[in-house]
Amino acid sequence: QQQRQLPLLGNLRCYAEAHAEAHAEQVDSEKVLVQIVTTEGCKFCKKTKDAMLQRGISFEELSVSDDPSLLVTLSSVSGLKTVPQVFVGGAFVGDGETTISLLVESDNDHQADERKSFFSAADHSKLLPELTIQKLRAAGVQEKIVTLAYRDISDPILNAWRGLKNVFITPGNGYPELSRKEVLDALNNQHKIPETEIEAMLEEFISSNLMAESKEGKFIFTTNPPPPRRGAPMNSCFEWKGNVLPPSEISELLQRGMSQLLDTHGREGGKSIDYTGLARDPAFGDVVRLSHQLAKTEPSVLSRDERMAFYINIYNVLIVHAMTARGPPPNFASRMLFYGEAKYEIAGNEYSCNDIENGVLRGNRPSPASVQLPFTKPHGPFKEGDPRISQVISPPDARIHFALNCGARSCPAIRVYTGDALELGLQSATEAFCADESNVSFDRNSNTLTLSKIFQWYRPDFGSDLQLQELLVNGVTGKRRTSLKKFFEEVPKTKTVFADYNWDLNEA
Image 1 (cartoon, helix red, strand yellow):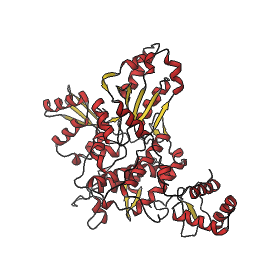
Image 2 (spheres, helix red, strand yellow; image 1 turned 45 degrees about the vertical axis):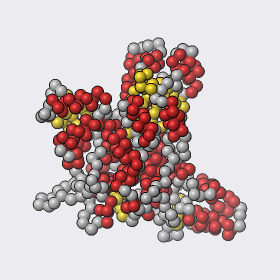
Image 3 (cartoon, helix red, strand yellow; image 1 turned 30 degrees about the vertical axis):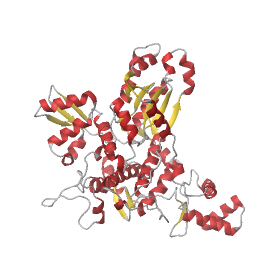
Image 4 (cartoon, one colour; image 1 turned 135 degrees about the horizontal axis):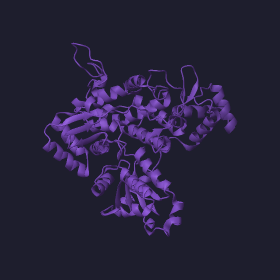
């Protein structure tokens, strides 16, 4: 099925502009524009930007979003498929960690102006073409989900609905359930129009999925529905009426919207998330409303790559949606239960986080946390006859583990996955994961390979030892790739150690 191409929802911001003139005479090189290439929801991008801001360094933010052609060009210059990437006058400086190290080193040296050291680090043999910079700027000026999710609704209806929300949604009542009379009286007070027109306006709210009527005859705002009962899908608060968007478009919109929210509500350089602030953000309501389209979408029409991209996006959105609406699980035991309880309804069937990961994306394999009874055959979440079996990805791709979990020092440049750029997105996610030495490292002296626990828990997904080695070599970049390849060639019997996994929640 031909999917409509959505605009890229990047960001184009210029920070600390006031500092540029103040420092221009002190440091001639500051006249050269600093650019940071980022993507939405990237905590390492935020950390790098904060380090610049703290030192009064002006920069232009360019979002690579999910444009494959831009990522290919960037990679050909910098050698990286991850973000952030920092440039000075188009010349490559390094990733976020390299940039921060340069700034911190200058701080420790107590130099008169740490910017001189930073600017001198730019590698002028690695220049970003001006045309690519212009394309990055163009990709950055895009619409938000608040515009795209309501594009088929007229402005008068939207404005009347927003006015009604302002009346009833208060800090003490975020999920109002209203009688028909309360709604009609409020609309009449606001607009002073005939009763028949007021009635028609309410019906327009309902047909446009701005409001919904419960079985008890109460009216709710679809952006602020009462939380579903425990165990029910997160998108079961109301039934979507009328047409729905194509499945790929829904998943991309949802993931873009959630990434924008993570950008806004990240704390401590992006290390943690303010879930309380995120829950109160009107943009979260836009995501909640749109998620209800999933119940009537049909991912079965998608190709294998499109379907994989769809479920990766939906998994990542569901995790944040459930943690925001229900609160992060307080301990390890409840966290394990969380992955089975957090779920969406998709095409009339329920899918928990476990169902999506182990059933769909891993080829219907047992969860590493599942208990296997003696003398029974291992099986995944979907048993014979389960209609969800039709959604199983075959063959699966082990790199989904890096797309579902971003625990690296860099972020994948592609955070919104699409079918046509899936390979590029998965490789970007792999490189971001492997760039973190707490996930992949090796010591020639002790012949030790240290890997994340993910490689132990999901060992069957990564194939033979040689296949795992090939994935790791292709996952690391630059000199580390050459060194790791040599390590495997010269050390036929390596000692593999699995690092402890950090289960701490990222709640602010």
